[in-house]
Image 1: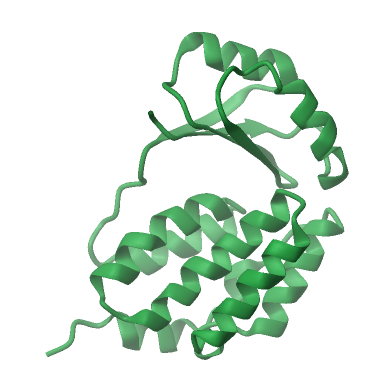
Image 2 (image 1 turned 120 degrees about the horizontal axis):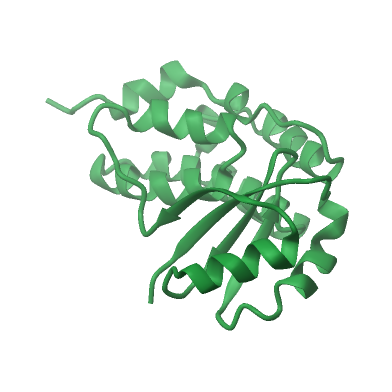
Length: 186
């Protein structure tokens, strides 16, 4: 079974429309989740991509698909952090979360898992699940992630999502500290 992320133009939907959007997508015929950003909607479908599935999504929501990601995003050695920040800056939090899972494992640095959790918290907020988002922030803190992430800033980003406002998630990162941990160990 594939995991496909459809990034869809947001034509005026807000976080308050999640239940309505879920109802509109109830006919997809495969497990899926939906997230709301100011600029886009994200539908992650756990099934094979097809023209028919794309048509169901666009007809149901009434918006066009802007981008499609099938499977894992490509990781370019040495660009992990800049790509992660790019996803955060574009409010593609689920993609940032998925993307950063392999780098933190390859660097064998447990604290880098806090970046995965941070992006996951933001994605959970876009799904309307504040409790799960705050639990992930707590897990980030428990891992020592406050060395990499200003957790007060992170909580403000979650609040911005629920207030239907633009986030600035990468501004919460201590990039210099993260870079130190991502340098090859000699």
